[in-house]
Length: 512
Image (cartoon, rainbow, N blue to C red; front, side, top):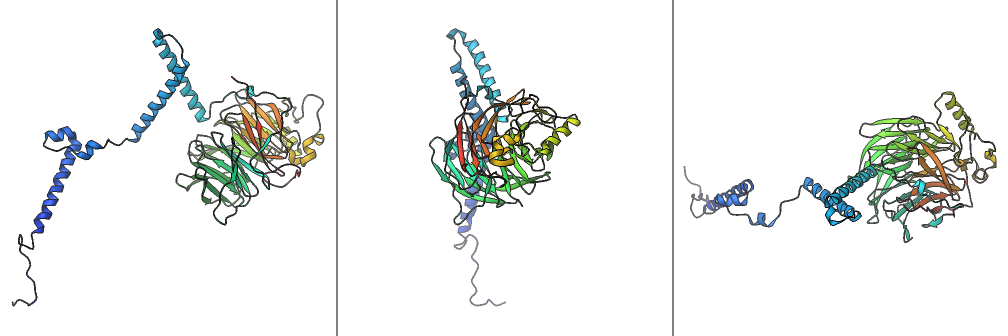
């Protein structure tokens, strides 16, 4: 066959055109040998690799091995124990020849402190603050803080270190202020955006995230540290009425008028789950460290949800819609209702363990009296007292003579029947101190006694207007009250001479 002109010859192996091929093979062989040496070094260690003819790796000799997650936890735990022991050593006094006794005493102090911190972190420990509250006779009115709002304040939030506070109102503005210095500013929104009325606020325990919800059915999230708006979650089909972060996490629970409770993860910025069961609007949610969430609704029920198991406990006892609720421990909580009562609950009973009717002394409905009579006939009546702590009979009236009629109360004069509706309750976290607010012109402080089985009135703090939100400082030394000319969830009454804003009440505690 004749060769065609223009065809090039294929270069011979090893010839001038094939010279690069052996070089590639050499490079591949060198890479394989280096990889093999690295494997031997990993298996035998540097010394063993040198004994077998391998050279030590320069990178391995310079870089320390990376710390695993378990090693990091162990290191942090040891450092924490060292700090606790150092603090315990400072409390232990003795002679040098009593080192053994001092060590035993120190270890007992360390163990007691660790147990106390674990119990407090889980929400089961309660500091005895109620007995330390100093009675001032006629308490002074609260001091206005933050900026004035155009409409009623509906929600409050405090960071866990009590340095930053937040308030939301029906004018759609979230205000942040420094508790110590007093400077305030409105949180930013996307350019051109404007929010509708807000009803709920919550701040994460690390103070990073703030969430707000309201009439627009969305949950708005800010990065507080960066003073930056992050995003809005949509998913509810009704007004977002309540928000609560799980302590120690970025998990957020939201309650809505669509009767559902939703769980969100702000670490992933994603929706996680929904809880269903309420037969009417959900108006309050609260959560501690455990994977349990408390909810209250206008179906007159409170529900304690076990999130992993997707189960719920249902509690009934109020004669009208429940407007507010707050956890005391993972198993005990307090609630306030439009029937004017404040109730104390335990997970072991479906009825209140203690019920204070007419807690703000302004309003007692016919439904309230009928419910009291029905519970007595059923033989399952909760212990009932009046706002002054006096026992009441089956009809809800005080056993002692000299009862004042509701029509003569100051609250009914200024706010009508709605003035006696309990619109806000709060618990000082990890303590036996609680508070409730209505429209009768006062915030009432309560002590939790007998293992959270009884509410005892302490004293009142003058507060004009409808108290729609309450927030205790972690130390218990001050209380914030969000007030307005109208109630949080509607416009059933109006007190025009009151102020839309936030007031701070100082609480004097006896030193230990």
